[in-house]
Amino acid sequence: MKGEKNMKTSPNSHIKELSLEQREGLLKTLKARFEKNMTRHQGIEWANVQSKLEAQTEKLWSLHEMEGTGGEPDVVGHDNKTDEYIFFDCSAESPKGRRSVCYDREALESRKEHKPQNNAIEMAAAMGIELLTEEQYRELQKLGNFDLKTSSWVETPDNIRKLGGAIFCDRRYDTVFVYHNGAESYYGARGFRGSLRV
Image (cartoon, rainbow, N blue to C red; front, side):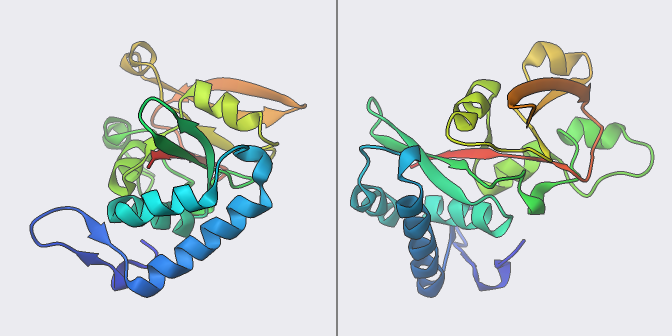
């Protein structure tokens, strides 16, 4: 993955850390995006978000992965119960570095030929994030117009997945649509969007 050469992994755990230079660069990028898109997070102060991020280096690493794969993560809310800030991928189109993937490992292994390089569920887990649910995807679409040319896998209910399907969403004709496909399918214009709580 992008930037992996400069990352340090603790020998005793799976927590990955960024160099000081990477941390500072990422925080600068996130702050600029935060200030440019205030309608996404009204009533939230950047200083509070930054102090949370600086205290949780593994979350910063996940945001670095989201950024490095084209997700353009930004704050979209605050959970008052848990005192956590919520980041979503806010790129205009489905993140470029996460397209042409099927839904999960089972789907990947079911393909006999022309297998994709990866799957959405395992990529998200490796990045320390979760796929948006359909509900979260609809919340994101209230903040702007996303996926006008692309589409994004979303978390699929177990009953659909057990029957071999998976669901994805996009925006066309100023309307958010939810569709289904075989979980093993993949397309150059379909990726996935993630969420992260900090």
